[in-house]
Length: 105
Image: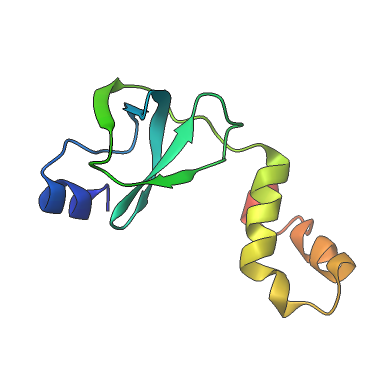
């Protein structure tokens, strides 16, 4: 879903990849967060996504390109998702670096 709920509910032109100005800060919509926009602000590192309400001081601009998260940010995101299933962090690291994982190919 590409911000479908936000577009239908709030009648705004929200889409992933659209540049926005939120309270004067420039950024780009990077994620669909249900009833919020996931915005990566220009001043933040790639992969840092902040939830923003779609009508609170948001100005919708042209389309841009979503910056990719760094490898360490991607690894940390996977750890937050899968890490509880391991006895230790080193066990998680061994699992994460296995060449058979799709992100390691």
